[in-house]
Length: 101
Image 1 (cartoon, rainbow, N blue to C red):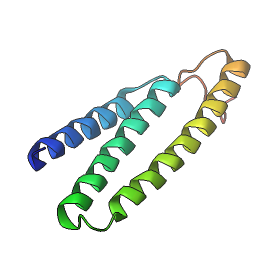
Image 2: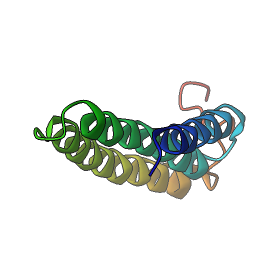
Image 3: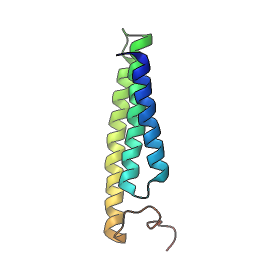
């Protein structure tokens, strides 16, 4: 695949993720947009690892670590969202401020 196409795809994923993170009012949607941002970064890691040093797999290994950390982040985030939904009956970000009671 051509380098420019992969970088454009990564830029689209990053911009969609940032736009969704800024405009999202739902916690689950915000977590999904954060995952889009992390996947865009992973695409860049793998692409530049293949481009600059194809014999060493540093970018691939680092992207696997990012995927593992993102899975843990998603599990913890969804557990927190589930707990807030159970207590507050809402997953909207502006209605679930735990400091204002």
